[in-house]
Image (cartoon, rainbow, N blue to C red):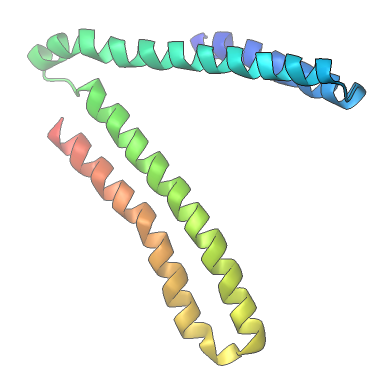
Length: 137
């Protein structure tokens, strides 16, 4: 239920901004969209601060009960998200370059796939860090 309370106003604001931008291409619409984005950023910062403060208060209770530390879970999520985004960007560039090279010289398939595979390895490193963080908690 809490998720819907957060997502619904964000969704309404974004859809309203998109509708306003499609109807008018004026400076007023741009300012309104910028204000909406700043408000959404402020809301996201509040949600993040709440999420970070919650595990800090509950960590003493979790330590006595033998539960998982919330900070380790947030760190694991950041590690996986950052590594996945980095891997996606790397695969996008290397994959495009590999396809361009393969169109000219098909015998370079093996080398191209190795380079794309190395770019995908970045995501594996993020997953390993997340597993280590969860294991330490």
